[in-house]
Length: 107
Length: 121
Image 1 (cartoon, rainbow over the protein chains, first blue to last red):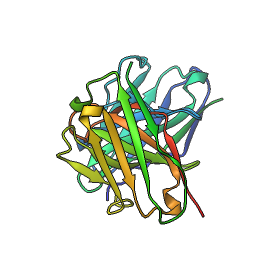
Image 2: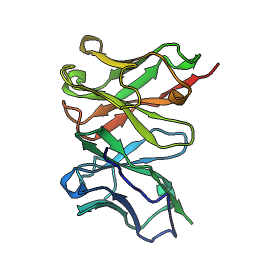
Image 3: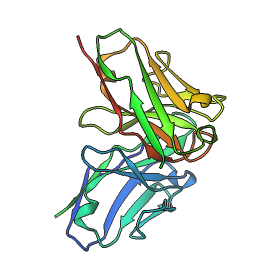
């Protein structure tokens, strides 16, 4: 079955650029979607199809996908960006797959 | 405003059944695939099941296959999950999620607030 691997945590100061990775076998051939989830809230879609932002998501959020790694980049990180982030792909073997999640902490 | 409201969760004994519902509004329900995603306490997201716009394509996670059944009623803009032979490891917050397109292999652009299912004796 297809597996997505994310770092458990990322920490940085306000104003810095956050990079959250999502590793998977030949992930570059899949469309990757990203969600954030704040404590006690439902997940929110922040990027889909590698690098498309839904309406209402700031331009500070961007994505890339190459080789075995997809990346979510958040520029000029703010305290309000603190959340758990999940990547998601579709795979014919086990359908919808989520990564384990990355906790973003803004120091 | 697009809304998804889950209901039907609760405390149930192992081996028993439960039926979840997701009532939707604010969008054309039969233009979209729908999904159930769960999250065990303190854990990550786990996809449970998905159904295409016309129920022609349905999928399940291996962990629930043969025990759970997804269905939809397009006339009532509603999604359902029949859960049988429940186990302790099914304990989780169950979210209803809307797919961007009619088939269920795309991003989930709207999520409900979830309904909690606790399986315990």
